[in-house]
Image (cartoon, rainbow, N blue to C red; front, side):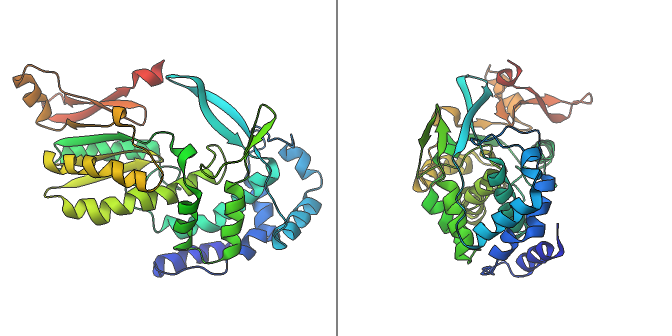
Length: 339
C-alpha cells in the first residue's frame, strides 16, 4: 500500500470522527490504478465484454491514462455485471454471483484501497469476514475459546435472508457519508451499485443489492452490517443485558452468546425489527436460541434429551469433553457442506 493510503488509515485511527472530504484523487491516480492492475488475478472469470487481464495489459499505460481521464471527468460508467451461479448446498440453481468487467474490477479495487484503511480501524473486533489479518479459522477459534472460558450458557444462531440481494442503496450511501465527505466517491459507488446485472442477454437494473462476487462488495457489506448490527449490538444490546454477552460476524453470517436466557431472548425479539428498518429480513426458520455451554450437556441429559447443536461458518458445533473430562466446544463439518 502506498504511503499516502497508509496516512489515510493513520488519520482515521487518530480521529475516529473525521469525515474525509478529499479522497477521489487517490482513485484516479495512475500509480494506484497500475498497482490495482498488478494485484488483480488474471485467471478470474471475465465480464460481459469478455476482456481479460492479459488483453487489457497489451496497451496498459494507454488504457490507464484513458481510464483516469474518464474518472476525473466523471465520465466513467461501470458496465452491467455478468450473472453466474456457483453450487450451493440446498439450492438447485446455486448462489448468484455478479462478475464485473476487468476495467470495472480495476476501479472497484482502486476504491477499495482508498476506503479500506478508513474502515479497518473502525470495524468492531467481532467482525471477521473479508478483512486483512482476519480469517474464518480465527473466528471459529475465538468463538470456541469464548464459550469455553467465559460465562456463556446460551447461543443465538441467526440468518439474514438473501443479504447481498437486499442491501438498500440509500442506506448504504447514508452509512458511507458518516466518514466519506467527498461527493465524487459517493457518486462513483452509487453508479457501481446501480450498474445492473446481465442474465440471459437481458440487463436488469435494481435499486437494491450489492453483487456478491465483485471486488468491492465484501467491504461494502461489512460497512453496511457495521452500522446495522455491529454498532447496535455494542451500543444498545450489550448495555441492556444483565450478564456477559459476545458477538461474532463473518460477512452476513453471525451469532451471539449470552450468560442469561432472558438476555438472549431479548436480543431475538429486537433483531427482526432492527433488520427490517434497513431493508433486511430475518430468516426466522433458521434463527434459534439454544442452551449451549458447560452446563448444557448435563441439563439436557437430566431431562432425557440430547444437547442441542448450532451451525456456524460451515461447521456444526456441539458440547463435548476433553480426555480429562473438562467441557470443550467441538465441531464437525456441517452435513450440508459435506454433500
